[in-house]
Amino acid sequence: MSAVFIKLLNMSLTASVVAVALLLLKLIFKRLPRFVSVILWSFVAIRLILPISIDSAFSLIPSGETVPEGITSSSIPQINSNIPFVDSAIDSILIGNFSHADTESVSELQRIFDIAGYAWLVGFLLMLCYFVSSHLLLASRLRESIPLENEKRVYLSDNIPSPFIFGFFRPRIYIPFSIDRADIECVIAHERAHIARKDFIWKPLAFLLLSVYWFNPVLWVANYFFARDIEIATDERVIKEKGEEIKLQYSKALLNCSGDRRFITACPTAFGENAVKGRIKGVLNYKKPAFWVVALSVIVIAAVPIFFLTNPTPEAEASYPFGANGEGVCDATVIDIANGELTVCRIGFVPSRDNGDGLFKVPITQVEGDLSKITVGRRVRIIYSGETVDGKIPTLSQVVSVHLYDEELPNASPISDFKYRNNYYGGKTITEYIGNDKNVVVPSVIDGKPVSEILGGAFSGNENIESVYLPDTLYRINSSSFKLCGNLKSVRLPSGVSYIGAEAFYLCKRLTEITLPSTLTEIESRAFKGCAALKDIKLPETLSSIGEEAFADCHSLEYIEIPPNITDWGNYAFKNCGITKLVVHKDLKKLGVCAFYNCYKLEDVTISESTEIGVNCFAECYRVPKELREK
Picture 1 (spheres, helix red, strand yellow):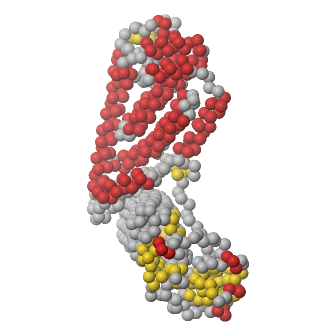
Picture 2 (picture 1 turned 60 degrees about the horizontal axis):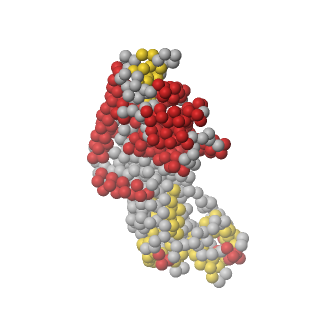
Picture 3 (picture 1 turned 60 degrees about the vertical axis):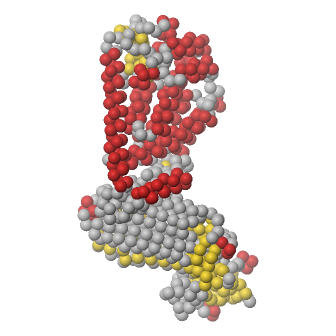
């Protein structure tokens, strides 16, 4: 029941966004005909009825799934509304009160959603009973009605206070005996206009939708304005068809027929309902809409579905124009320029693996291109002859040419924004970021030495940072480096990084863009756990190790390809992810224990028969074929 309620909750939230947008449009474009408003309200109904929606770059919906399906089983429950202050406020409550150990079989949040699901069902049944009983009661009151002479399907009754239409398949008009004879023509014209517009269907349907989504107060407001717009649109249609001369008598009829509110609440389409004073004013002031109003109406009707019946598209994967290292090619970063030589640091240098310090010199005369563009921090590609030895650094005699990359480097953040120290490998280590910028560019050189490492926790807990550009001199992202950076959205990882430490990006819940370099070999435990906005990530073929819960609770992650060389699997690597499609390389030998546990959306799995599936690899993945779940 909780899964049903979460689905309905998400649909009601997106519909609420549409409803609020339409209310704002009504305030801005007050002169639009009311039939346009009624058409626009139908888009709210579409959102409430259809469980799926296409993605569009033009969508103004903040999030298609604010409450992830797996939130109840997540050890770090979070929402994803894409509205920062809303996410921050609610997540602090969720994480503070409902975080739990992975060993718990049923979380407290699961119990709450179960209760909410049954409460919703009770509320829905009560609303449905009210709908049915009120119609049955009304039908019993109409049994003694008699036909009005010379009027087809019009009846008179002593048991009703106001005119209305009743019936879904063969609607009839019912009028009280007490009605002023002078008002009958206007009343019948109004009710026939309702029938022509099929309002006897749309209004009960709106009430049924409200019965399903009774828990959302925005939709109660929307239903009120929808009913009001139906009546005003019908008024406008009658005045348009009957002419200006009927305005006064029609207004008097409205005033005389304003009925008992309790009756009107139970009645499908009563003549005297909903804001009679405003309707009379609208009738008296009604004018045929000008051409520009009609044109604007068409534009609005065409635009609203594009912006509000679609969901936002996944963020495009970040990409950078860097080539790959290989024999005869060496990418490097300029560290110093002096005495006609460039001191460069080879990108991809790993001190623990390679000999030397990764630094070497090349003559500036061998640079091809605009020499004025050579600056410290600039990336270059060095073409050399033969094979490198002694730390894979080419000797001076091997260098054939040096080429500048076209990429314009962003200006580095002030060095005073960082604390740093010398490291064992002859470079600099960033130990702490103390600046206040939202967009941080880590310098590649400090005091003439390459910045090769970021100490664990250097940026941890910084809520101000939104983007980080890391220099190509880095080879390692240590544990907890960006942990709990709640507003971090994008990170440019250098192409030479081979290691991402434990909890490096833990709970960076707004992180949407990150490209893993082709040199990466190891991702430690919980490195990206709780990155709820991360929608797409490509694992490089060089990757050999994925730690425990490395990508757990990445609810927006939709597609993943597992490369062939992973031999070391931590448990629950992709637990509680929103993955819908999984492609496993045919040469991969094994998937880890509980690797895709509770990936509740996963249904499309491509895997070779030769790949060994770890214990409970697909446990709780109910859309996955049974034979995979039971392995």
